[in-house]
Amino acid sequence: MWRPRTGTEASTSRQPASRPTSGGLLHDNGSSKEWSEVDGWLKRKYQSEEVPTFERTEEVRRLLLNSARLNESLETIAREALQKFEELSEHYHGEDAVLRETMQFMGIMQQKCAKDKQECLSRLSDLALVLGLSDMSLASFHQGLAQVRLDTLESRQEHAQQQRRLASLKRHRVEAETTLDTLVGLKRRWTDDRESEGDLALRTRRRSTELNKIKAAEDRTVLEDALASRQPQQRQHKKSRPSASEPYGVGSHRLGSGGGSSSSGSSTNVDVEASGLTIAQLDLKEKSVEELQQLLHAQTTSLAAYQEIPPDYALARLKVKEATMRLEELTLEHESLVTQLAEDL
Image (cartoon, rainbow, N blue to C red; front, side, top):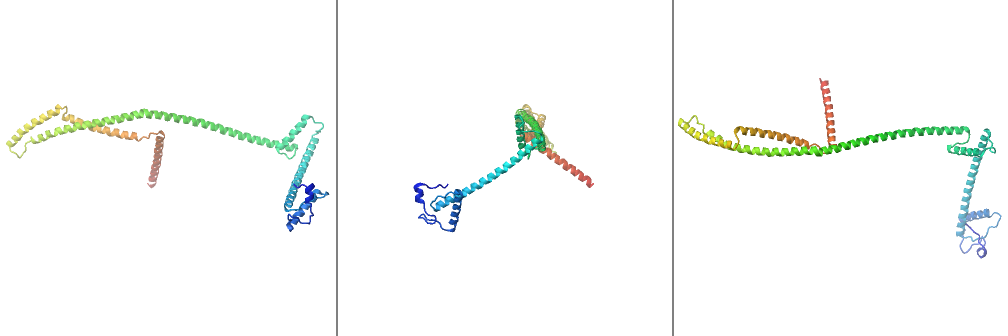
C-alpha cells in the first residue's frame, strides 16, 4: 500500500508534477492514461483533502496502479457481498413475515408463548430447513412429512430385501460348507482306501504275476527236458518197424534190432518214469502250462486296466463324466440314424 512521506524525505522528494526528474519519467500515451487513472483514484481516496506530493517514477506508477486496481477489486467484491447480504436479509424478513402471519392465523402471540413453545417453534423452523420447505405453512409440512413417509417405506422395503438376500446367502454358504466337508471326507476316505486296499490288491496281483511267470518258466524248462528225452525214443521206435519191400530175414533182422531198440526205448522210458514224469503227466503239464499262460494273460490284462485308472479322484470323475457325455452323444446319433432309416423306408 502507498504511504505518504514525512519529514526530510518528503521535502527532498517534493518536485513539480510537470517537471521531469533525473530518475526518468514516461511520457507516452499509455503512461499518461495510467497516471490519469492513478490520479483519479487518489482524488477519490482523499476526496476533500490535499493529495501528498510524491516522486513520479516508473516504479511508483506501477505500485500505485496495482494498489488502485486492487482497491477497486476489493470494493467490487464488497459491493457484491453487501448486495447478497441485503437479498438474504430481505428473504429472512419475508420468512419472518410468513411465520408471523402463520402464528396470527393460528392465534399464537409471540409475547404469550412460553419458553417451551418458543423452543417448539425453533424446532419447527429447523424441521422446515431439514425438509427443504419453501415456507412454513401447514400444507408444506404435510407435503414434506408425506414425502418422508414414502422415503421411509422405500427404505424399509429395500432393507427387507437386503435381509432376505443376506439370509439366502447365509443359507447357501452353509450348504456350500456342508458340501465341501462331504467332498473333503469322501476324498480323504477314497485316498485311504486307495492307499490301503488298492495298493494291497496291486501288490498282490504283481506278486501273483511274478510267481506265475516263474512257475511258467520252470514248467517250460521241465517240458523241454521231457521232450528232449522223448525224441530219441521216437527215433528208435521208427527204426524198429520192418519195411514191406525188405525180405523176411532182413525184417527179422530189423525186428531183432527193433527188439534191441525197444529194449533200449523201454530203458529210456524207465529213465523218464524214474525221473517222475510219464507221457500222460507231460500232457497234463502241457495243459497246465497253457492254462497258466491264459491266466497270466488275463491277469496281465487286468493289471493293465487297473494301471490305467487315474490316481486322482477328480480326474477319475472327469473321465467318467467324459465317457457319459460320449455315451449320450452316441445315443443321440443312434436315435437320429434310426429316425432317418425309418423316414427312408
